[in-house]
Image 1 (tube, rainbow, N blue to C red):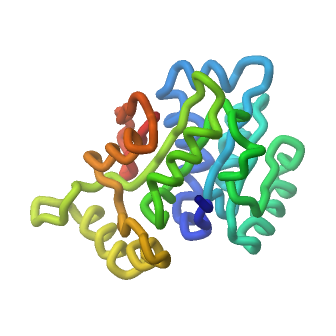
Image 2: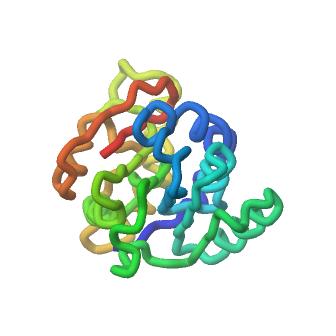
Length: 217
């Protein structure tokens, strides 16, 4: 299962640099403690795009090492430049690489994918890859837009906007393969059964107040 490009996530730069390391990850007490401990934790950031999520985590946790993976070469070039400008190139490494490479299995304390799962042709396959990447006792952290599972008149302006993006961009992007799942803009809160199908023993929806919804597996 290839990792899609995260290059279209750039409106979330501020969230990735600030809320991700200082609000979202600390909501998981055990993960927060591990990221501050020795030996230094390793993180795999799938669909990293220009690298802001990887860099945000590295800024918030000075000991960790982050590998950012994306299949879009221009995005990785931009991410590498961003790492140099932020003087984080020694702890954050960006690669054009398929994260399903068996050489990566079981190497990471935390695996993240941020606002990218809904764009993937095969979200269950991607989740299985994430499951294989973590060490025993490790965590997979997923952030996706917070919407209902169906478009209804009871939604709000943000939710309606997200479903509009789904029709015009996210859904077409996620339908490029013959057997694509066609997830669309949002995974919705009841679609986390995908994690169980991918082999996760437990899934928790974190109580984070944001237009995105965060889940840990």
